[in-house]
Image (cartoon, one colour):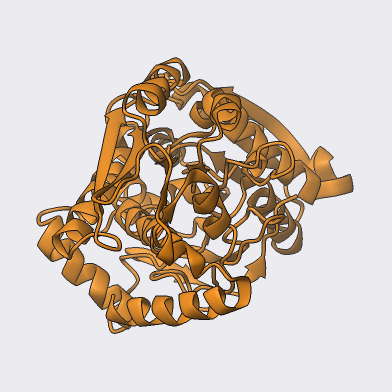
Length: 406
């Protein structure tokens, strides 16, 4: 953490000299949700419902802000992080976001989770001109500053990830016959759209495409259909609960296709272990963060700092769950954004600072991947590396690949 702070101070003074933004420190300016003593951030997440395993992210972020406040806050201000349970329900998040914006009067929202959920509040937040930062979904729509200048994503976009899997299949699987399981919403469709684009003229190699609803109790019947189609490749576009069920059911049926799993379900703790480690061998995914089960990171400074932080602020939490790495990393980016605002805590300046990162080394990103944004580039992370599940953890292979939003 100390290293980051030094980098930040150097970065801000340099930025201030270049842009003249140093004036912000001399004259205090505030929007709703900010004052001399407080910064109010709004958040919703699925602490219940079909995607409740992602609740670990919100709990991690909540602990992160407690640790920041214990260390003195952000430029002397304490962060009031208000997090509410939306149950992964688009209708519920609309109600909660109105509460956060109109009653709690938060400065901005941060890392609200789910493509369908964020879609439900997308227009409202932009009409209200409230920053909707670093949303926890990789849909490509979050990088559209012309139409939605108040919304920014965080992770690599699903569309490009889908393209990468398709190209890998065509290059590595002889005579592929592809079966696709897809969550039937914008998140699933974004992945599937990129996947089809990546296949190009070979899109006919998809022999079966089945969907499920987030509220479906199981995906067993869908996996039976995929096996019966004769598919020798399985692209698993599902959130953790369904993704784990699908892997386990394929093994129960003795179906052994080449398996590709979307990054959002690549957690060893919340997916691979519940699916069965034996059933998970050889599955391929794309990564951009250091996996907590990968022993090669054990002696890196940022990973050691994360482990020490987890021990202090989240004792007893399962460190094999990659959601805690995600939560810590994205909260660190939000902290740096707020630090850069200085005493100008207006919503306009929050967005200005969010769009002004140049090759920032965020803790826990894979080597070779950095954060860069601009007024026309709302994709903070634009690279991934493929990994194969081996033993009890992910094994990275190949080069870091650029993943620019389309």
